[in-house]
Image (tube, rainbow, N blue to C red; front, side, top):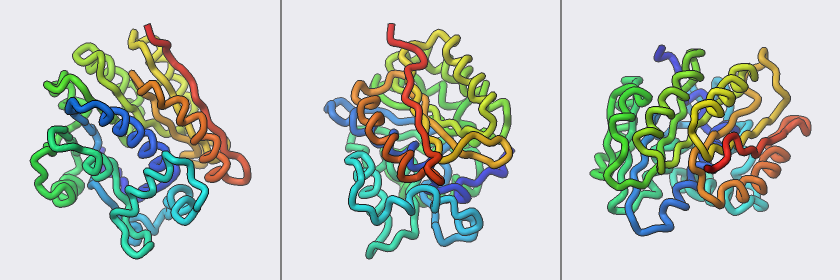
Length: 281
């Protein structure tokens, strides 16, 4: 199914969480001089116009970054995220949202690499234009879940795999676990960041249970809710499941997530989770 377009959802509260976590992991990887490789399995178009028909139809950015843009009390990790987004906007106007590929590109050093997968033909065309033929970046018009496994382990032996499918298909919840097991067998020391939505909590419970049974150690979960669970009202929560997280990530998010829940939560209904799904060995 290829009907999903992230332009409808760009800059929403789920993107805020995903991209803050992503930037924290990238900053941690960059602390060492050795190069790293990033794989993004569902790259999308790279950036999104918030004045487009897609974005204005849903205005989901109103639940996320729009509430942060002009604030002067942001936590440090949120400041970093907003400052990077401002690079793609001029004169204080907020018209463009940078997706994961462009944010990652800003963090790459000369010897680092980025491998992007995208299956939607229109998005691939936009992605190639937005990446500007950067020699550090490889773009594949392919299914990232299936085709990225073969890139592991990267020759750098350091890196991150970002997995953020649309979950349009119910099978995505089980497919991501199967793929993570395959990836971890090939590259056990890598960091893996799995984004998930909360539409029907039962699916997420099954996802967490499957990961606990997978045999993969050192798994953390970070979730942000802006309203109470309600399967009839779309996505009210989303989260990031991190395998081999940076040691500093939990401490950072224990501060950031309460602030985001309070700031972005609807009618004081915001909440968060910071949990260890599977301990280190």
